Image 1 (tube, rainbow, N blue to C red):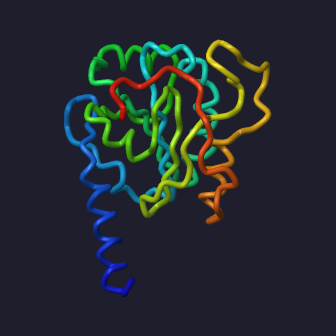
Image 2: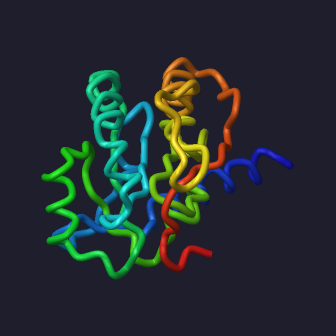
Length: 183
């Protein structure tokens, strides 16, 4: 492919990323890929998923550690039936970190290859998907959890992205509640 073709692909990728139809809870358009972040972490959640809520302390720890290093954290609600009031209650009750986004057309979920809650996706500063999958390996199956995680996949992906290294496992299998209507 010639330099013109590569330039077109880069411009198209940037435009496609910017065109994501995600909104803030108040309904105003959000532009999460237009920030100066070194990395962007999207965690796909549902208000009715107990596994999402159980990960709140780990997500808060990661946000506290990495936000000062230029990492943006976003909570993504891809179920069009989620209400702003329920989302606000969940965030308040569980102290979930990050700014909530509404993704009713599941465009961001598809771009991140997300299908369950909780599932994390890490994008680099150029908007490339670097990692998608589980937060860690604590959940082996729905309803089956280890006492402690042995693998910290999301944390490792953030560290690798910030260091400019590739992620050892760029796709892992997340365990949780299915996101509605994601195809």
